[in-house]
Length: 410
Image (cartoon, rainbow, N blue to C red):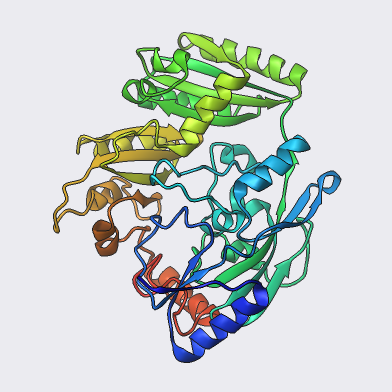
């Protein structure tokens, strides 16, 4: 177990990383620790505990902006926003049950992994709400980028670079995010009995409609049966779901219109507030819909029109799958044979994507041994890999930050 270092402020983080760079000592960055099993296993000389970087330093509800130290618990931020009827629009999922972890998510961890939930199809990813950042590079050098508004011209947009970098470029110390009003009303329209291909067509039509849906998912019958929502778990059939949010009169009108559109295809039902919230939490958080604790979990991002074919190829291994993001995101569970030659389905899953640029597959959950021997993230084409290497050299030339967390040499 590596020795833990716990700096108390950004200045001490800079001192520690400057020393580590000079001595070529590697560091595993830890905020809350809730995502330790996401990415490749990391073996380092030291563990850098950033949990002291905690607290909201700026919240202006009328300006829809919030600034916090990077290790501020996400739950604390969400509770503060809820008091003002506001929210993080990108709907960060909670993978605590998926990883059987009791650790708290942090705002910096969510942004560093660029996680977003079902509302991504309308609101965008975490990176699209990331306004400003302060951090310490692997050189031990402090930097900042961005500000308090979406449009700023303060230099390179390092927020976009840090989002999804998994702590391999810098230790984030402070972040600024855009927040949005919470919807007045939420309704979910359910369509029953469609196969995967027909469901993707129905979701695509809803996505292209004027009804401004904020979530589109399809649960095959075996997956729907795991839902705690009675209309879904007791349906005895596949369930396709569309969420509509906003002012009450608008939601009522749009819900009625979508029910009429989908009613021409099959039987429909409607969920209101609490049931709707439970269903979309299940879809975002994954664990209750794919409950086998021994399964490896893959996340496939594909062109929606290719989703059913990709799922069919992957299901040849006897797994289970459901769809989010109007069919553009597949959550796939495969049973893992715990032996050295087993790749957790990586070859089959990635071959199911058909073309190199038709999507990407990420291993979201798997045992350490598996994550250590395969590509957890989609392998990059040589030109992109070279660019990633140059960026790493700019921020962390000694390769001290989370070495190997994303790729073997990064």
